[in-house]
Length: 451
Image (cartoon, rainbow, N blue to C red; front, side, top):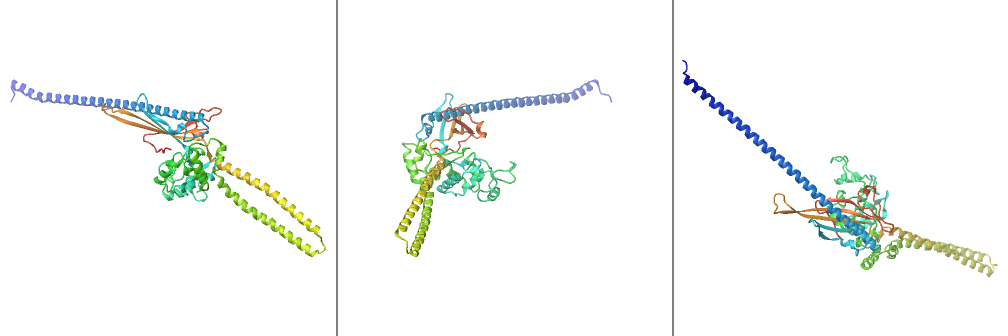
């Protein structure tokens, strides 16, 4: 049965309505997807721009912090240089000991500067230098550990960290075995956290490295921190600034009375010359013990010679008894020979006393090399802070802090590893060079024990 013309048209309209509606839905979905993609791309671009802007801002802030640190570093160097022009010694009365009062720059940075005399402390790197063990420094460190209530054997462990060999000092055992048996990680071979361990065999760069030594606890480090330092070259102790415990550890307990006299006098009259340092007599009792031994042996020699003389006298008496016909002239001759012999013995003893005096002076001069009246190194702490406005809320701010620690060498040639780091190296014919080196930047305040 054929459809009428009207029915055919109606049927076509019915088929075309769903088809057109479906096409419009697809088009709307495509538009929505495009909008979402545009929004995502725009948001991504905006976020990327914000990140880039924030990175640039942080880099700018870090550069500004670093500039302030460099400025404070130069101020510290100039402060020490100025003081070196005012006097020939470094003492607790000098201008550098006070540092610089906190001040605020024009752009809102708060600067704080503190200076310590590293020469007032025992340098751990004194134990091994110039390719050899320093026995005098090792004995001093043992005494320091004992005075602090710590195990004096720790001195040997600290030495083994530095010396280039693989054996325990004066023991012969393997150093790596000691570290492995105590579970301490000194230096991982390969750097991947596995394998065997061993000491670093190099100088200390930080007191915190003591934590890697066997049987060293945080309490041990806290006890040692006010009395030790880690300057990368040999460093004598400054008698004008050192603590009583450090001085006593250097000169020995037998010279504690001389240390007390020094501590009393240096407040008003610091040591300013080699002659004044020698006049302190800080090592007199240390070498007297050697002289006592020599003196105790000299009477033995004298007794020996006396015994020989007595034997001679006995022989002479025997001869006199046997030779009954000899007269008094022979006896007088024997007495004259005895006097000549005693005179010769006295002449022999006189050069010995001179030798002892010379030896004593040489011993004192050698011991005095561990002391000085000038500082050869300084520790510096720089603190820089500023209030920064939050990016999302201009009404709020947050304080940012940056810290820096560094050494300043005075009158010393730096090890080659630090020569390129030295920021300032100026010297004149009559004044020592002043060099700042080994700068480290900290996001938190590092340990820094002030005098």
